[in-house]
Image (cartoon, rainbow over all chains, first blue to last red; front, side, top):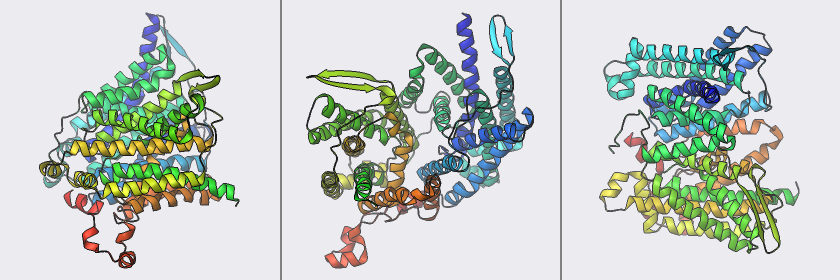
Length: 290
Length: 311
């Protein structure tokens, strides 16, 4: 029993990290209707900022954390400004956005390899203590991860549901053209969406680095968070969060059974979801009209 | 530069061109983006290696078998994913491509046929594959498929695919079985990729699942886009340029892929139609004059205009 509970906690940790990443995919998809594959690069840069802030600059933990969010947020906005805005002005088909995103992701990944290098790096160990709750060994870092994830997702949901800009985002995700006609500033909404997705990506990158390792090809993990977003329903925030948690927990249990099949399981799940219910757990059903 | 080095690049361009030609049928002509084509190449490579090394089948026949296996897989895959729209088809192919790679990553296989010992060891792949792919052989294969693709595209089936790309609903209304057209495109592109996979395996002399990552699929798609969607000439040029470019830029070391990524983004922004913009070599003014062709009769709709006007 204790073993399963332990795995459950690990699963929630992993799922939480996926959630931070997948909301970025989902937010962009809900407004612009394309899968932003450059998001993986943004997460990776966040992890590197965290690494260098901790080791080279010796920043305290929480400052590093904010730096990660800030850096990734700025990067996401730059990407939007220089890669997607020209396409958006031309109202190009969404597949062109995907190709551009892929190009941007190749660019970011190899820029890091060229400037820094390709070797994986370990974060310095920040939290070594573990707490024992009822026979459950809980690392302080896991606990912190769960708390940080929960708080940032709560703030995100608060912004989306309780503020004016959140209302604008919801309106745009419902129908961008009509929302713009009603006086909503579409550019501002997209700016905010990329900023929020970027900040959460930075947090996720830092958490990932703390728990695992920093390397330029982090994209394999971010792809899984994308699968989580599809699983929960692309374009739906609660869907992305629930999908991520479920995927994280399932992945950990598959891994505890046979670790060789964890990635295979994730992609098999992706195919299954697409075949059975492409709109995912909570996605809105969009009928293709044309 | 020795001939050995140049020949290597040429062989690589040849089989890459075969993959890109296949992908051009699916992406350029039918308008379905695939991010999992490396999966088909992977299947082709493994099947052909099993054929030549374990079963002792002739190289050329093994290429054919690997192509057919990939085609069957493509048909199965098409059966379940072709009804998905746009992005979701893309994501599905991404998932399938990665899943195929991961299956081979975990596959352990030992075969003993007629005294031959064949080991397939998961992530380590297969080593010491006989080097059967020559430049002349691969050139002949590519030219054969180049001609076949041209015929296919100028046939009724090819025109049906174009109609599907331009407007699926309208094509359906005009009595085209759009599912069948898409299925044909899927099967053909899988066939090409499978054969190319066999050539790849027998050129490198070893295969590992790591050689078929998603990045490869993206590269193939980028080559199609770079050359221009819906143009065979474009695909050929795109492949030649993008295969040669990393080699020419080898001096800049790690930076070459940075430029590659940057180039993709710039092309998407500046010239989304690609190099040829949906035109063939025979559509270029001076060559058309040379061939004495009636230009207006030959012209196919270009990929970009229709879609952009719609959006």
